[in-house]
Length: 368
View 1 (tube, rainbow, N blue to C red):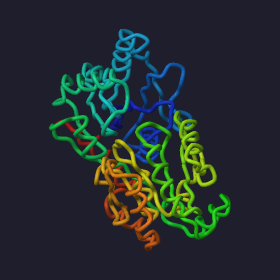
View 2: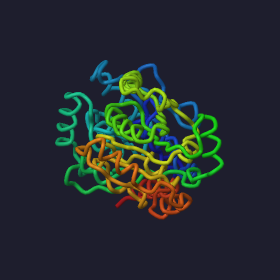
View 3: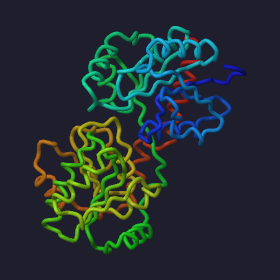
View 4: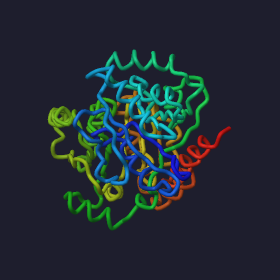
């Protein structure tokens, strides 16, 4: 890059808001602007990535999607890497089903960080076949391998060595606040002493909302005043609403949509339910623990996120009744203010995550 500036091209920000998008926005906002310049590559025709307007200093380069034309996709990538002097391609992915930018970067002598953000895929058979093929055929020895968790690394890189860099959160923003708890409960018409269960997850197959509703149904049977807050949106929302009606839980379940005030909502809750089929490193569980919440997680989720004693793991093979029983017998109101300190102490702050990535770039820049 020019005048010692390290130019990084990121791939992985899509038009939809998700974990990778949020991660990239935070990284772009907090990395040292005197040492690093970030641009973004995308393959969604006519749809800019979700945070494009919030990152005015970055350029967004669109290339022809592979499904439109594999040949033009490759030509566009080659032209981009030939024209622009990028130092590093930082490739963020949940699977290895599309890796053309990685191959193009290597053809042009650009260093590559391959960053695995998830530990499974509930997508099509084609995705899985391509994932396995590319995992076997990429020249991994020429690629710097990073993952958000041990599971996410093994899913992508198999037995090859990789570095784990946890995603971070703004720890202080998620600390428990009694006044927020009171205000949110008033706004939602929930009494101060009602048991409030929460879910912060997009309506996607991997998030397992059907099971979550069955668990809450068991809870509501024993405690009719209990409430379930569903925070998020997504393609399966109509289906989940139907399941709520079928279970007769309309009065007890509140659909809150996508919300900017997640820390306040966490303060209002007593338990976070998180029975995902697979995850990379779910930051919602870290945020909830920073708020001192009791968290019930599926044991499919990496143990690395269990940073406080308030985090409990249960198998998905266990019945909804078993989950409900643990939820009802566990201690909810321990000292919730301790959560944020525990999370920070375990290295899950934003700043720790950003410093680790900056160090990685610097190290790749220096000739060995």
